[in-house]
Image 1 (cartoon, rainbow, N blue to C red):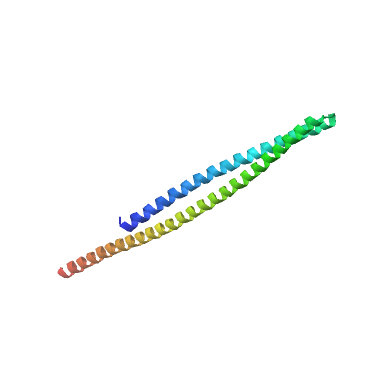
Image 2 (cartoon, rainbow, N blue to C red):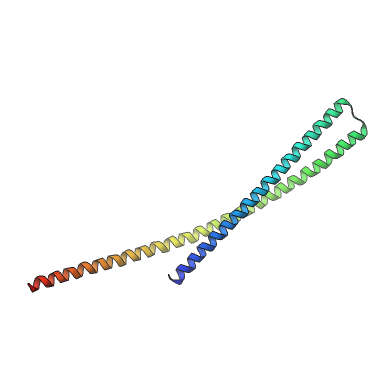
Length: 153
């Protein structure tokens, strides 16, 4: 195997490993994004349940101190929701950057694979030419022997 062949094989393998690593990183970021989304959804549901409790308490009659406590807690839930939305947006951006990195690694691998395929096609063509040359030589040698034996008789 020539130095070029082993260098290209090494590049293909390194590119494959980089692509696979980028894919694993992407999968991890997508899992994290999903978890952040679930947390946001849970927080939103909890806030809705608490708001429903406040509405029920207001229908039944509520003292001002309890009302203030409900409102303060809802405000803290709203702040938590805002932070969770920001965290989700940041995570989604991270997923997109990671996806772009994976795509770049995939494209790089594809480029190296294309070079390797071309190299293999050239090798096969050269091998076929060698085989054809050997075959032609055998046929020519047989013909020469036949002619020379024909002339000797």
